[in-house]
Image 1: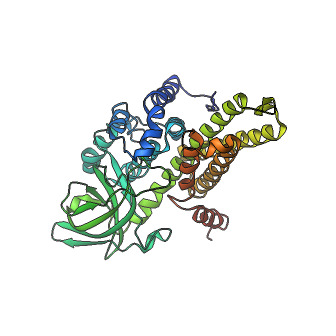
Image 2: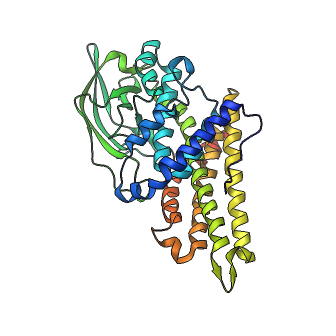
Image 3: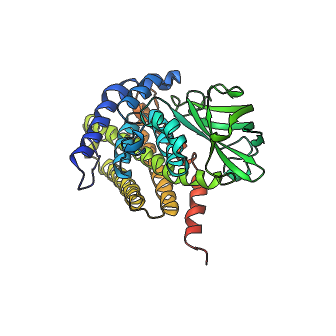
Length: 381
């Protein structure tokens, strides 16, 4: 049973992309996801295979060897991956949405040739480092320093919770110069780039999340992205795209929890009949399905707006907060429907519940999303 609904008007090519993602997720990811979770194992070989199929280049233009997908098709494909394993999905989401978007919009032609093409072809895995130990939600308070030294930049500081930070080939790192916050393209083999041990997380355990130490990392001047001092704006643009990725990741998690619940309630019998025949269970399943559909519809609506070239900062925050809280609610109900079995790691809804929680936290907490939405209700001027 699948609750995935494709919008009308998709081309045959777009349908093929979604089906390819679905088949890969069902055969190459989901059967192994529980073991990866137990071992906190980052499946780089699977990421690389997805890259060879084009899924690391979904948001890159064709002229830079990407797939050049519209945002809705990208989200449909990402949902299929997230339904199989959110840990794999977040690596794809970060890579496609944030560093890719930042390079597409603000990279020089030389930077796009040098960095973006390899990312789009799946030869290079990228990550993003914004948060710091003392600046999470208050991202603009970052302290990592960028000092110009002749024809080079020298980066010094610490980053926290960097997705792909210990496994990526390239990181988009935010640092403060005399003129403000800047974005730098940092190869992870640069001397002084030191990832910490993987964080021991509640969920998304197979996603690589680390602290970073930047110990006088020396970069050529052309590793500065765009204009000096404009990096924070670039990062916020990337996060607008990234939040749609997290929203659809939440949809994938919630959808899979719903699918497992529907199947379980048809098979599990209590008091002489299947759980699905109890009205209380029916109401719970109906509410779960409604929230999944509503979260997907809102996320796709924002994606369509983005594809039209309209602003989406406020709407992306709406989608992110609604979908993430829907995922947390749906997975909580799934655990409840499974009863004691739902609390056991041998059953899939326990992992989905743990994975859902972080969607309310990273790339901006639910509280931050509400602040952004509220500000959008009172535009300046």
